[in-house]
Image (cartoon, rainbow, N blue to C red; front, side, top):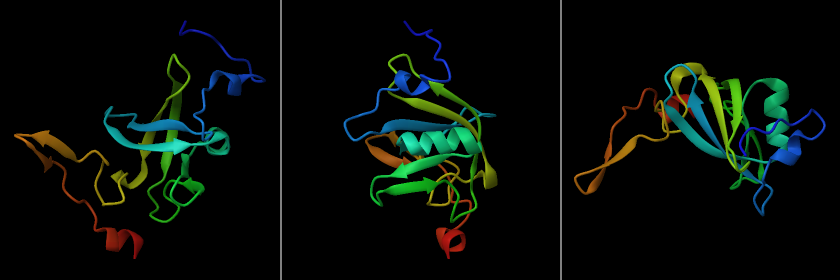
Amino acid sequence: MCHTHATAEDWRAALAWNEDGLIPAIAQDAATGRILMFAWMNQTALEQTLASGEAVYYSRSRQKLWHKGEQSGHVQRVQSVHLDCDGDALVLKIEQIGGIACHTGRESCFFRQWRDGQWLITDPVLKSPDDIYG
């Protein structure tokens, strides 16, 4: 059933973490519905996200928490958090500050589309990564 209600004490029990203690999180623009990015969260990242109202993820490559926008200024203000029926995936409906979610300087990380047998870049770079990160 997809309509269980977790109390404040057992909200973590509704989450199905993977073997590494992570859950996939999709950031979606709350206004347009566009998928902006995908990242992982551990329990601490989710707790900090819920407490602060800004997206915090877990970087597998750096093995540490990552407050989205900590370097770029492109923070994600969380409007709502949604858990799927299996409890193993999250959608964060967010306001993307600065209009750039991708480290390449694009609106979305999903800027390549399969068309005519190849991956075509469909979104322009809005700001050079060198200008964003120095």
